[in-house]
Amino acid sequence: MSRIPLIAGNWKMHCTIAEAVSLARQVASSAKGLTDRQVMIAPPATSLAAVSEAIQNSSVLVAGQNVAWKEEGAYTGEISPLMLRDAGASMAIIGHSERRHIFREDDAMINQRMHGALAGGLAPILCVGETLDEREDGHTWQVLEQQVVSGLEDIDKSAIEQVVIAYEPVWAIGTGKTASREQAQEAHSFIRDLVGKLYEKRLAEQIRILYGGSVKPGNVDDLMQMPDVDGALVGGAALQADSFDRIIHFQ
Ligand code: PGA
Image (tube, rainbow, N blue to C red; front, side, top):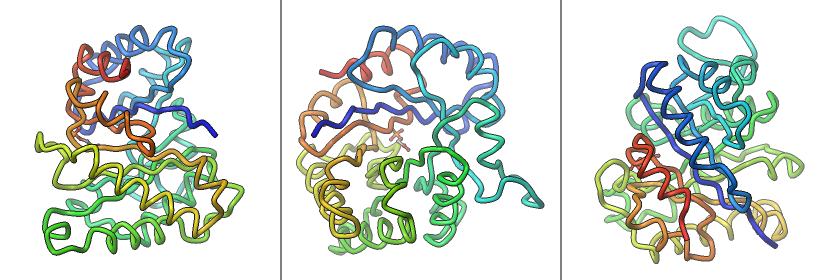
């Protein structure tokens, strides 16, 4: 069993089109020659098409930061799987904590987005993670179980190979506070066991589980040592070409 590590950059609400294209070109050049890992970037929707075109000859994957569950229709503000693919994306981030907490997306909606992505030919990254209060109150496992079970509800065994899960403790996102590698490992192993119970052990061994939350050049090597950490979802440090370069070259 070997899982190809995935380093994913989530640019959130940053970059004009020109800035995004320039950063994407630098990422593409950093990723040149890397064959033992995958690199993905999720620019804002406005620059997806330009970014995809600028790096079309590179191995860097492009993702949407969210995705709707219908191909088209009266859904103001939403972007469909068809539109994301049309703009060159092959993946989509779903259920990011900022979507859950700022925009009040609930588990049911996140599950619909998962189905939309898979039906529309996009590989989803399902984000899960507990808040600080939930951790301190001893509810971490309950929260993770609820988010993983609902996120994957009614997703067929045949589709699960496309799915990536990102464990992102909310208290570590954008705070400079990273989970220790032991905390990350414990959560990843819990999630993998859960996927094994929901599907089968073989599929649980294949699914990639990324860690997200203040991943930086200085802690990525440590986190990537852990057996169940299969990559990283990087926010702030993905916006600087040199930091992201160091992160994708984790050892
Ligand atoms: P951060 O963000 O690396 O800035 O903590 C991670 C994320 O939100 O995916």
